[in-house]
Structure formats: structure tokens, C-alpha cells
Length: 270
Length: 370
Ligand code: HEM
Image (cartoon, rainbow over all chains, first blue to last red; front, side):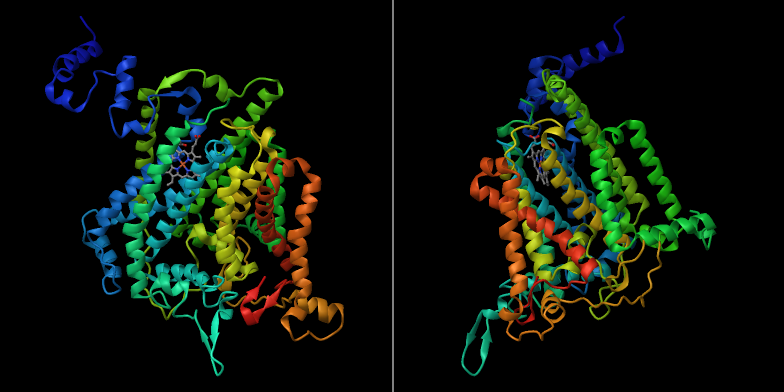
């Protein structure tokens, strides 16, 4: 009598792998031959982010710590939970805070989704930093991967900005004051912040008076906040940056990052 | 868990708290962290041994459990938004161990004239399905489960509705920016909030172009990249992880520095008699009044900064001529300027602690203070 494994295999062979629907979607049989294992990866647009074969060390967790993959995984989780939150959230001071409260009290799974999104965001910041640490410690930034390291640094920056813009959205005390502390620094940007060095030199001397080109209502911080305090326009701006602009840019750069990993090949000792 | 039962910690533990608080003078604390950092690198061969590493882990967990008997520590540590700090410390610690454990093993192999372990393992080529995809799937499932447990057990914070008229004290940035907020103590916002963050980004981006060492690609090693690894870890651990820890647990009301277990007293007053370099030079040194024009008043400070950025690169060039030869003028300058800017933070910190130095150059007329 054949054992269970063989029996299952036989059923699969007869009823699944020869099935027209299966064959229309997947272009391979049971992945126990070299050919089929290669096809699993090559014939799937998502799995094809990987090459079909890798050197042994690149597969081991102790080499990559899985941190790059987890960065991407966190990004996906945050996208999904974030879309859920967007259904219930309106980015205006009248509604923002109460929407978070009703998310907690009235919406089924609302609190859970908010928690997943919040803690996932913290985790992603940490994971991306650790991914960078691993890439550094294995010297993987060295030629020919200099450019991809640079793309990574921008991704790190975007991850921080995503987290930072999201911090404002609950519109509670924690949020506006953390963002106030953070954006206050922009006042001091040389040349373009109204309390920055060199800024006061950019003026037009009209004889009786000097006309300041950059003042508290025309500086870089005003541009960022849409006002001179963290108010309603800042909430809307941060919302749009957080939900649309920054994820798009990050997604775009991740595509570049992944493509370059494939083109440069995975780092390995010579 | 023992915290609420005991209003005051038992005597020996109180003694331990007092001792730690005593060590939490800013200059002493940072000096000790740096000593620990360099000592850990020096004694890496011992520290990476699994029993030793495990011992350190157990000791640190014990220290945290004891710390929870301090009401102050407990209050900060149990804020939900501070949970990531513990993950930061432990997961980073584990990753550093993992990297050095492999580096030490590889360095021994290299010393014997063998190839690194990654080279031997890399000789076999494996199919991504199933060897990698299984690992990815299992790891993803574990991380998702951990995140769900975290989300079920700890509620995301929501404070009172935003009130622009009522500012909390201290008002803190999110934890990953606490390092920058800490820099604000020592530098004006245009440096701490704009120039330094910008140079952290540009500094990271130029690393590959300014590291002329072809060795150490694709495997863990310390021996072949001593300077690079030490510099990077100094930035990563001291200027990021430690400053976050300090910002979370040791910066209280009015951004005063508190001991780890010292209650946050809103009325703590520190006599702040910080002086500018110009005052030191003209008044204390020359016994004169401060010159009125800024360019007259501030030339000693400008000279000092000029010397820092003009003379030190030459000195480093003499000490490491090969570095200069390998990199050429432009890349060498980029590297050294970033290096000196990074070093300027601890330098300014120590100047503040030892001489109460406020600004090296101070031109309030133009918001230009260094
Ligand atoms: C959102 C952020 C990021 C995502 C999703 C991401 C994703 C990935 C993935 C999936 C890999 C494959 C190998 C691995 O898992 O280690 C990888 C490799 C790499 N990453 Fe990232 N990464 C991110 C940020 C960064 C950062 C911050 C850096 C460096 C500053 C960086 C530099 C690199 C380099 C140089 C490689 C090639 C490594 C090698 O060949 O060994 N990435 N990244």
C-alpha cells in the first residue's frame, strides 16, 4: 500500500496539475524537480523578485537577518491597515480626534487595526535601521552596490517621514506637540527659515524701511505647515503627504531598490 | 509588578538606585558609555561567546526588573509609545552580537589563511523555492503573529484632544528623533535640526564612495575593516541608540537632565551660567570689554573653527597617508568633513560640561550661533 504522501501526490498529479484552470494560472507541476522549482519563481511576477537560485550563504538568516524582506513586509501590512483606517478618518480638526475615538469605541476591529498600524510603524522604523546595519556589517554597500545603498538611505529617510507625518493625524496633545517640536527646527533653516542664519540678509532696503523677503509667513516652515502654527492646514498637508505622496515615492524607490538588487547580484565573498 | 506593592524600594536596591543616579551626570554618563563601547569592541572575542552573551542578557533583564521598583522609571517605561525603546535596545543588541559572533569566527579563519565561512557555504547554489521562500514565509508568519499579539495587548496612546494653548512639559519628539532633540541642547536649531540631519543623510550616502577598502565584501569581519566598522557603530550606537535612551528616560521637565531613577521635579533649577567663547576670550582672557562689531568680537571663534576644519584634515592626512592616496582630494575632503562634523557633537558636549561654553561663534544679529 502506498503511503499517504505518495497518495496525495498522485491525486495532485491527476486532478490538479492536469486541470485546465490550474494550467492557465500556474505554468508548473509539483516543485520537486529542478525544472519545476525554477519555474515556480520565474513564472510568478511576485516571486520573480527573487532569482531562481542563490548561493547558500545568501539564504541563511544569520547573513541577511531577513531584515530587508521584513521592511517590505511591514510596508505591506501598513498599507493594508492604513487603507482600513482611511475609511473612518477625516483630516480636519473638527473630526480627526473624534474619528479616532469612534474607531476605538464603535468600529468593529477598529482599535485592533489602529494598534497594528501604530506598532507596525514603530517596528518598521526599527527594522529598516537594522537592515542598514546588516548591509553595512557585511560590506554589501561596496562596489557595485554603491547606488543601491544610496537608494536605501533615501528609503530610510522616507520611512522616518512617513512615521513622522502619521504621528500628527490623531490630533491629540501627543501629536501636535511632537510635531511642533519637530517642525520648529525648520524655522532655523539657513536662508529659508525666518529664524535661520543668513535669512535676515535677504531683504530689500527701501531706504526708509527694509522689506524682509523671508519672514514667519513666507518661510520654509510656513510652506510645510500651511500656516505659522500646527493648525488645520498642517493636518491636511500631513494627511496628504502621509497617505498619498510619501507612500507613492517609497513604493517607487522600492521598485528601484529591488530591481537593482537583482541587477547587481546578491553580495557574496569573492 | 512589584512596583505597586512597595511604596519605597528595599534598602540595598535604593542604594543601587542612588549609585546609578550619581553616575548619571551628563559628562560621566557619556564618558562611561563610550568607555563601554570601546571596551566591548576590544574584548569582542570574549563577549561574543554564547555563555558570556547570555549572561549579559540575563543581567540586563534582571536590572530592568529591579528598575521597575523605581516609580519614576516605571512611569516612563510603561508608556505604550516607549515600548519600542526596549525592542530597540534588545533587538539591536542581539543583531550586534550576531554580527560580531560571525565576524570573530571569520577573523580567526582569515588569520589562518582560510576563506570566510560565507565563502564555503556559498559554494552550494540552492533553489529559492523551497529553501528561501520557506524561510521568508515562516519568518513573515512569526512577525505577523508577534505584531498581532502586541496590538492586542497594548493599546496605542490617545491623549487629550489637541490644545495649542497648553504645551506639555517636556514636549518630546517621537522616539526616533530624540537624538536630534538631544543635539538641540548643544547646538542651535539651524545646526541640530537642519545641518546635522542633512549631513547624517549625506554622510550615509557617501559611505560607499569614501571607503577605499576592497576587503570585507559579502562576509562579516572586523579585523579587515576596523576603522570603518568602529566609526559606523559609534554613530549608530552612541549617537542614535544611546541618545534615544537618554532622551526617553533622562530628559524631564524643562529638558533637564535627570538620573535614571531620579523623580522628575518640575522645579529642578540648574544654574545656567553658560558663556560664549568671545566672553571668555575678551573679558576673562584679555580683561577688556567685548568689542561691539561682530567681526571684531567673534574672530577668535571663527579662527578656532577654521583651524578645526583646515588643520585637522592635514593632520589626519599625515597620520593616514594611504587613505588620502586611495581617495584623492575630493573624496578625502568629503569624508573628513563628515567625520569632523560627527565628532563636533561630542566635542561641543564636553566643552559645555567642562567650560560651560555656550557658543563658539555667536552673532545673534544674524541668528548665527555655533
Ligand atoms: C523601506 C526600506 C527598505 C526596503 C523595503 C529594503 C528591502 C531590501 C531587500 C528585500 C533586500 C534583499 C536582501 C535582504 O533582505 O537583506 C535589500 C538589500 C539591500 N538593501 Fe535594502 N531595503 C530598504 C532600505 C535600505 C536601506 C536603509 C539601505 C542602506 C542604507 C539599504 C541598502 C541595501 C543594499 C545595499 C542591499 C543589497 C544587499 C546585498 O546585496 O547584500 N536598503 N533591501
